[in-house]
Length: 208
Image 1 (cartoon, rainbow, N blue to C red):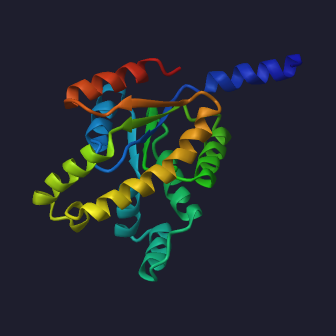
Image 2 (tube, rainbow, N blue to C red; image 1 turned 180 degrees about the horizontal axis):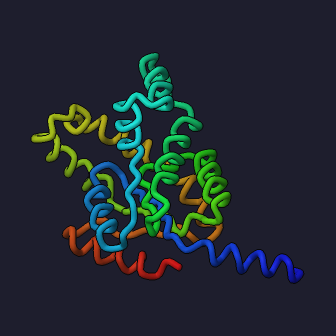
């Protein structure tokens, strides 16, 4: 590494001050509850893909209208549309200390797009943290939630197990992607809300 590269590396490291964490967890893992507590403790902004879609579509933004067009046809919304929404959210909040990305990225192309976007801002993904909960516990939690939530997909065990399968298949490749740079970690998702939060906090406290 020559002097110019060294100076550039120091400069980039200085710019990378924000904490950007990808939070994964199967449906019913309590991820949403934990994300809110982490946001409050570490002054981060929670970015959920579901919330992004609701906002963009509800406000009939250009990206929202494009997403709705695909959804109305029963098609998957292209990555570039979802990533565009995420970029808008990040750009609109330059003052925050960092972000918790919830439910994104779920594929390698999405991860690469996120990496590229953050790199263009002199930043990077700080860590990927996955809440680990065994399948039978997830099924039990969601069936119980389905008694009051009214969600059809929380009331059918076969549907629930398929959702878990899809989650596992989607997240495993992204987990491995960030493992290559020693950024992926798992946290035990069993226990009380405070016990799980304590484990997550220990991980967040160690993020550079």
